[in-house]
Length: 583
Image (cartoon, rainbow, N blue to C red; front, side, top):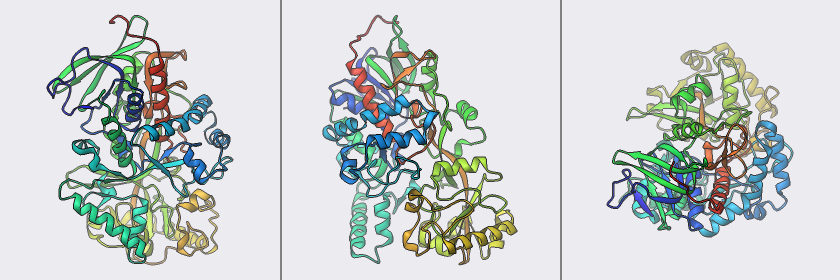
């Protein structure tokens, strides 16, 4: 693979004006790299264009979970699950909020895509023992088998390509750049209680200390970093692949028949017009960093609250619209969401920390609005939680509240479990402490009476195990992200009774675009008449989500990103069309 790190002409013999490729992929996130890998496997000459200095996009910052029903992994851990069950589940969860034909194509091609990329690349998955669908009380939902996780990856195998991989969010690492997944976290927390956990913990810490002798961060990659590392390693094995970093797309060009046949590119080191013999795949990550589209689609949500990667500027979407492409319609929301907490870093940037599963659903924690009242089921999915923040009264910001026992046990956002090292978080206001609930409420500027009554009501729920207000802990998904070892009647409920009390402010953060370009089952971009724009494809968050803005399971962005990358590459390379005259 040829790599142009600093633009088009940064290396001798760099990308030349008029260069020909079979497929040009715009964006080097998970979906874009997947499309490039699938095409390269089939012998295509591929160009991947990335406007930032890193590959990986938001996928590199994610858990890397890939939701694809019906694979051989599913059969291994949940043989009773069927594609018919998955279709039933999606029909109930998504319904008419997205075209059923796209869900059908996703289910049809999913197992094929996973089997091909595992058999012919470095990408490898495993099913987690228990990883429930998020709306687990709907018909067709299952507890395991559909959500696949990338196996950890040795970043040293990337050699000189390792620095090109987008580093993880610093707040998601420990010991100065050591990545940990939930298996590692469980072992680290139990290292004084279990010989197996101690051995695991010592092994990964020693590996990290060894890494730091020669690398800026750990090379043991997990979660989304592992997935992107595996994709990058896979692409690097193909001599007919080219990666151009720090490069922007200025125009998409069509021939006389209307087919997209060329792309105009620019960088600080030059410009080039390259030909795309089989097509162009848009995988630039969606609209979330486009200030105009953001103000239209996400009014009142500052970009500072978005924990997604910085490259999602919407420029590729604008170029597609100039060719007649239209956006998908009817989605529940134009974005996917999670509650985030904010903290200013030493370099002046803002860390937006998504609260997925580690704290808010645990016993001894509640979330309240500015009246000191609960307004949402704290154990629901992060998407529904953040949507609930936006529809409730006085819930932006909201306040995640815990007693001292819960803080020690689970941590709160960027505050690690154990209850140590609180001073810097208290000093900069990320964490608020009160010796009593009344003192905490006064410091937060919320109703002390409301908070006291809310905690009293919640503590009564914890004693009975039944939350009569919001039904917390009633589904398999909710129970899975609680703590069954806490000893309560309900794994999601526990009394707040041990002072001091703590709070972290929460804001609704958009974690990815759900509204993108309208496509067909081959990932071809459609115009207003529903006709495919020949030679133009969209995958990942550039493609309008097949889930219709609903978040039914873990990995429902990365999974379809992989599958429709497979479908796009398959369709484009099968096309008999050759380049026509220059436009």
